[in-house]
Image 1 (cartoon, rainbow, N blue to C red):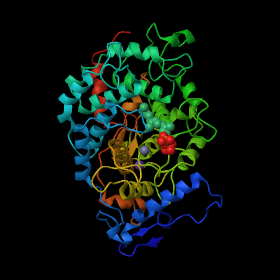
Image 2: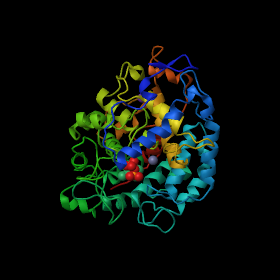
Image 3: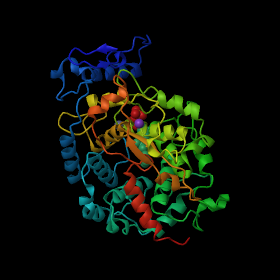
Image 4: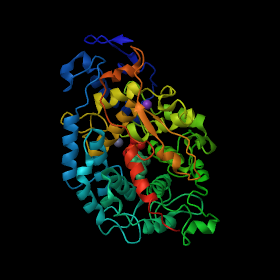
Length: 457
Ligand code: FPP
Ligand code: ZN
Ligand code: K
């Protein structure tokens, strides 16, 4: 452990210098990796020369989270029309969701946006079920997911009753396929995003688990939305141990999250091992974190990026809880959870040192500009680090029940000198339900509202 000149607390050497083991072969990949280390190291070690950083540092050499600036950045983003967005299927539902979730995590009351959000989504819903990316666009499960989560975030009768649940059920039935998976839209591709988003919709909206009569999956002998699903997801795990969008593709963090969260809806988290090789998954997930950057990458030989603080980072509480099993019903939430299986200190350093833009908003890496997508998912990463997540055994035949039992406690502060103690002066980001990626109570409230209004299949 090297000690910074200005601060008394130790900062591990592996966050301060480039690894000594470097392959002599130079490729485009290795050069991009070196360039990324070069842009991160000065910020990671800025405690040595605070003039390199616009932020104040705590005694562990961590910059503070610039909450006011990030709140302002997200509020401006919510006011503007969406800019063209690279890298993800961008659309208005997502822009709304990222801004609302980010604001909530930072302590804002997003229910104030209820009327605006309801108005926005009113025009995006199709009478044939689901939400499109905007008025007149075909329904898409990704936009529907972001839309439902936004409505859950603002909450209230006005938001819930906007959703045509019966039409949603029929539409989801048309997306379920004979091999157990889901298409992302009618005649669109089938992948694990579809499966995760579909189960989020079914569970939050309390829709019947039986497939509508016109579902193509009935021809495959399936009767329930969950039939054949675990087996389909299992086929998406690759030789690397990670999980791909669909069978035969490359493992990627975003699809790993969709699959693992989907399995936490499909059944109890500790049953994940029925469908995934957990040893392979752990080894692949661990390899997504780099030093000295401390951040997470989405796939083998690619670069760290702040958004994987969620896509890869939120796999960790789900997998850790799956390995721990349900909360002890007697000892309750206070139970000692297993140690983090990744370096939460490294991730915190990457997010706080490298991903905060000097004028608000968080980013992919120092050479990129902040946007609401990276702001939201970096904050989710901090939230995961600051909380310990547990779930309970749900005494119910309802396969989704356990997803609503998750609870978060503040991560325990351990002995002095322990990496966890760097959060003594923590960022104080709010907690989330790691399966739905919205607050626990907002998921439960939508579900409870729906359960009081059962739909007949
Ligand atoms: C690669 O981008 C990104 C992907 C292959 C996955 C994109 C999918 C999502 C972000 C998740 C969608 C989830 C839901 C719930 C709809 P890249 O090649 O630019 O990035 P990389 O170099 O980091 O792999
Ligand atoms: Zn990114
Ligand atoms: K944790």
